[in-house]
Length: 154
Image: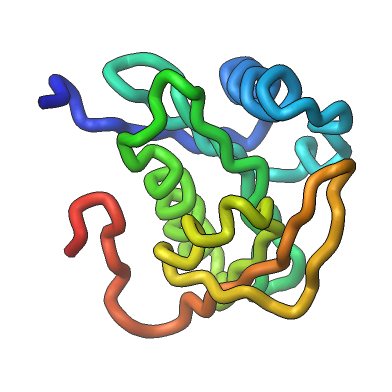
């Protein structure tokens, strides 16, 4: 049983804890070398805390007035299995809705596509490589309907 439920904050700049998580997951664990880019400067970044520890992150940026992109979703290995990735995505979707987003797109590592499908995303026909890793573009329509809480299942 967890003592404190995970909570999050959204930042308009890349927070040092977001850098640390992405470096641990994407650079050290998965071997990516081009993790940080110019998009970080214009994105909003979520940081999820698990029992007071910065444990997960992701970023969100506008592609157009009604379409936003989620990316760089990462959870520290020591905190996996606690639905923190779903909290990252849900927090970014909520934030995007507040700014008029009707659609979210993302580029998922193919091995993580099933995770995003559970969150309501569908695969497109766009398969591509990011560095050495196969990815698929996925999308989700946000307009209308009650928001589903992926953490509590309600």
